[in-house]
Image 1 (tube, rainbow, N blue to C red):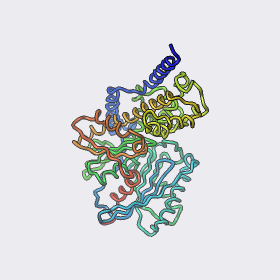
Image 2: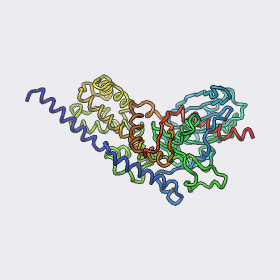
Image 3: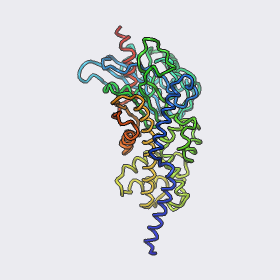
Image 4: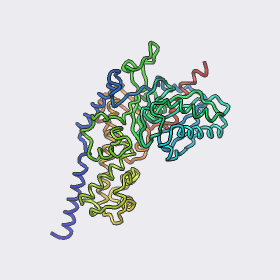
Amino acid sequence: MTEEDAKDSDSINNRAIVEEICKPFLLSDDTYQQIRDIFLDEIKKGLCKYTHEKAAVKCLLTFVEKLPSGCERGKYLALDVGGTNFRILLLDLHDGGDNLKLEIANYELPESLLTASGRELFDFLADCLYAFIYKYELQKDELSLGFTFSFPLKQTELSKGVLISWTKAFNCSGVVGHDVVDLLKEALNRKGDIQINNIVILNDTTGTLISCAWEHHEAKIGLIIGTGINECYLEKTKYIELFKGGVNASPTMVINCESGNFGNDGSLNFIRTPIDLAIDNDTVNPGKQVYEKMISGMYLGEIVRLILLECVNAGAMLKGGHSDQIRSPMSFDIKYMSQIEGEEPGNDDVARQIFDIMGYKRSTHEDCENLRYICDVISTRSANLVAATLATLVNRIGDPFVIIGVDGSVYRMYPNYAERLRKKLKELARPEYKFCIKLAEDGSGRGAALLAATAFFNKRNQ
């Protein structure tokens, strides 16, 4: 055997090891169908008053019974909080061809506030609102606000939302079990100068659906796939056993699935790999957000890092060498995955740069190809898992045609993710139900302001 033949043999053997390590992440069509059907069972548990309390997929009431009509007018504020970056928006709805004007200010939460007291967090939000209102000279206006709070909430009405649990990296004291609208109002009252009496609460997924419905009346499903994952959909109120709306109730309501919790009860254990379990154990909320930890942008890079580490330990990549970076949790960002998959096949420039960042100065073409393969496997599993639960909602709604409003950094920016999701959803949804996926325009922010407009415009003009 020549030296060249030996290298080829080693390369083939190394690739076989990489593929074997990745094998548990390659799920069959039958498995995705099984996940789709399990999610339907979870939806039914969440809607049933007898099983709701123990259901992993809570199917929380949003009290959003009406989607925008397009007739709303006036100025409305939105506060959009879902991560370390948050926004305040001013939406101006008026007559004319271009009847929607938006002003946006972006802010960053200091890292110390993520685990501070709830009072400190909400005082910071109130300070930013105060500055925004004075900047746009709104202090004398009668203000209504849509408050997007992208964490699990139990709502008893459109203006009350009790935090069930923190997710992502948040763990502020004195907030879980409390109405976040009241906490925001108390913080605003401490400022003294401004009054925002009309506040509606929602999460980013509901906002995405509302924003999409402003332009597309067939919109009945909302999806966020970014740092986290969640879905909402328009359900018939006759199936929502916890809703006591009376004879005058709307026939439909938006249900917030909180689908990131799917699998918390063990129903997805049959697809969870040792790496999935390891990531879960190392988070601030082990045993929670199980579905999210296999899918969302916060965790995908860490899954790739742990697979890469296994490949290095097996001697199949990077000559079996360990860098400080490869051993450091959360050091491999999803943006690296996106850059690698966005590069032309056969071009290793980006992959080599990322290996360099990870402490490897002499990566080979084989290393680069194997890393691309790992990223492809993990991002495809993510898109396919999302498609499985979306198929459940498309089938449950049962309309001949439905529009799905989508937002989130992973969907927007990750190469080929949208097409993978669409393709798998087409395979998993019943063929008689057609769908179209629309990228929602500034869903979590604009949708919040539009909900405030939908809720308060008619009252203001009665």
